[in-house]
Image (spheres, one colour):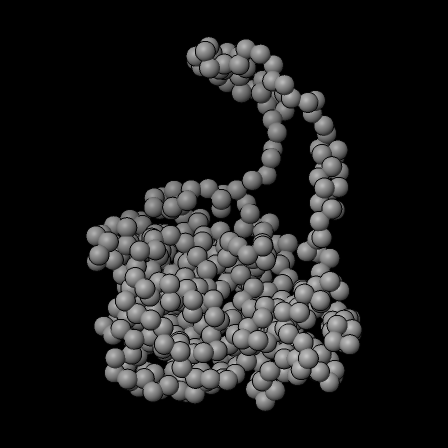
Length: 437
């Protein structure tokens, strides 16, 4: 929170309103035996300017993340965050009560969450969204819980090209829930699996963990023909140029929402997005803000479908997540409103064009190749090396001022957002050539 010091005049007016003369009178009710009767042995204070100088000198002893040009991807991206986003999302009235259970006191926050949900539905071409989850991995876990509950089936199929960290999260949660995620497909893109009548859901990440575009429509169609739920792990900022999950045939769409107006923040807090079709709305986890009218017919906002988690017996709950990431979701809503449909398309086209240019430049060196040269990608791609390990290349590039990665299945990811310039891409290509030579 921002620090706003009280002036002497503020203090005088406060004491006058309380009918007091001094600050000592304000604390007269505090027992004398807990009051300090001696001065604290503290050094003299310094000015804000001097303090900042000292802190900056300490920070200068570390290597700054700002010194690195960020080509890192793998689920968290260096997209531009407009100043407008946190000027609005950071307002004090949006950082107040944790849970808006009393709608008469929480109309602003509830409406903001309702607008966020509406934007996610518009973005995904699905009918219902909740007010967010913790991050992309927990959103996927909750999507699987939803699918297993809705179908009454047990098996969970997940494409081998999905983010390995998401699969590990599924495996961890699955131990208690009674399932083990079963991988299908191979290579850079998957084929429709042979989903039996006992399969609850089929999970495809599109674009996948290598940045490659999957044949999602065909996979989802095959899954739904056998009665399984189709789950799409998507990139929100790809939907300006790619078809949305609902149009591709997904029943449930989940995503990591960090790219929507949230900084990288050293790994969090982030934002879990989930949306589904109306038939499964009662199985959505967490909070759902709804629009209604009051006794006079005026529009108002409430939390709806609350009798699903904390208000009923645990064993009957559809989910045991009953919270969300309100602040991050509001930032996402501000960002999406700032961007708009045309801005979303322009951003997607810029990312795709820059990634294509970067892939061409980086593979000009004979010892570098695209891991999946014949498959289309969006804003990131995977590189393989003839005479070096991806980890060694990654670390050496950091020493030369370029942050790339992570390493996925022995390939090095490189991501290009709208922030990367031609000069930075050319600089990365020269640095890579220097590393390999």
